[in-house]
Length: 261
Length: 315
Ligand SMILES: [Zn+2]
Image 1 (cartoon, rainbow over the protein chains, first blue to last red):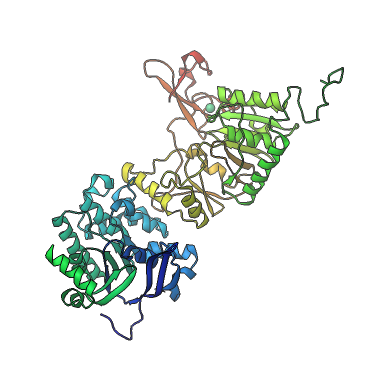
Image 2: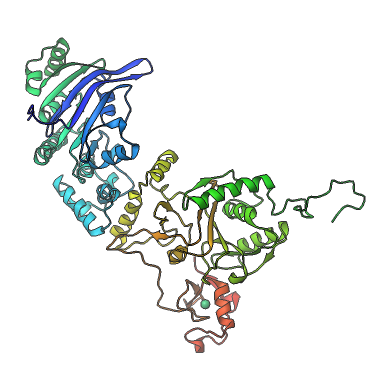
């Protein structure tokens, strides 16, 4: 998965963010390689959400840099891009799966339009083609295409999440950010969605950054784990190593509390 | 009408007998509005904010259009006011009286004689000519508002020309109805750059906006926005390649003047469900009738002008 000769897709260097004088995250560095899924775990307040927001350019960090291997011009500092370039990147080469589908879907338009929107945003102007792509992606996330003209509010939480995933994938992104993607769902629904996510990531060779407090979710989806506490990374390693043989006392505590639960 | 004893201060030449400034608005306000209009003309389709004034007519009566007209009209101008294509609706009559009263300008119902035409809901059928100004009354100026309530975000979308979302609306139309059902206030791109709401005119009128020799000004009073389409500017209606933009079509022609190329209103003529189609542009229709044109089947219509008491306009 991680070959030394390969160019990283994303390079995060000494990333730091302060909210006034409060540390959001501090001095975080890592490389993400094509096809790699990185899990960021920690309790609430650990800084994992701040980090995700900075890496995904939803928030400008106080310090450090985030570079991305753009299709057109290779490695570029995200915050050196124009806003237009950054927004284009976010809705074409990237995806963002929110915990709450309401944050990632337009609830007032149909499932098909939700998916087609990203195509229309990059210039698709043939209705039948757009509709075909929408239907194709809906079936790939195992969503009944008979219902593609219905509003998201008429779907269950699990189905809404599938529509959100399809909406993100339709433009063929290389990097997906996921914020507790199965949080708030019933255990059985969650398990099926996790299987689907893992298959899609494998089939499409996606890179992903997954933020979760749920170590079971992290184990199922991520190749590599970063454990955060108080805004800093306390341990990084292959997922199985970190979860089966944690080195840092805090990681040990986190893993053992899960095992006890 | 100068006071004989000359105790009152002398009126400026712009002032009328009624104590108003010419065309109601004070000169400073008019200058401010003209600056917004100039900016709007310089950036076709771009919504320019302006400090909208309270007008002695309620919102919905076209206070935005009235302020634009008040700022551009001069004593030599001839004003025509139409509402739904007609010169004689309450709204049109009120606005025409307002300017006749406050500016003393000549008014007309003849499209070709007008230098300024204020309109709600229609563009005249008679082609406009260079030098004419068409002022639209706009209720909601922002085309992206239906899907994006945040002003900060819609501004950014305009700045970055992110208009994909507008196609979502057309997509939904086709998915639901099998065709683009949006029939009024149909979105357009002006000069290849800005997305614009043409105000609730029928899409039938959209092609008239394109490359029109007249200056087109749009005023939204409540939302305090002015925008413009300068003469001979490209105005393109949004569509899909496999669902191209189409205007409304009728199987009938006008029952009164026989016009087959004008926007028709359906009129109920009796309580047995009888109906006919007539031009929505009443001046255009009248002019054609004066020139001897008649509806397709005059035998059914002994008097070409129906008795107004028998007419109830459909909603
Ligand atoms: Zn007619």
